[in-house]
Image (cartoon, rainbow, N blue to C red; front, side, top):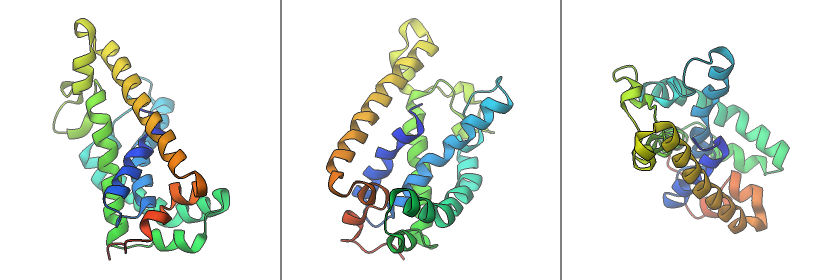
Length: 196
């Protein structure tokens, strides 16, 4: 899996593609599934590090709840205080409504779409289908002699490298007002009214 911040280019790309969805919801939604990774590492080393929040069931329930709450209540004060982004714009972009719900959902689905092709274990249809039966296409294509672990390592390296290059490109593009453009999306959002 790409490190959590490397999911950011998916959120940014989705925002640029459909500028009416607030970037904060896309960002938080694209990061939320990975909050289970350290929890699973701490409590049970015997299970893979992707489970409930990487399934459609978990994503549509717990993932949506966490994404909306964190985007609405925590994102504005944290981003305003840490990165000095204007609070009024953050509050507006993170206000409860259809646009926020849709952006969180799209961010969550974007996370799943990025992870799906590069894992040897995909709980996307858990609890209905055994996660070990869904192997990502990149893992299969890059697995030397059927070695899924090696295929995962190669797929992970490839996807992480591409996402890192994309992240650096976005940072370069946004460099004149880095944190505002990357965390609020002000320059692209100002030309479009959010979905009501």
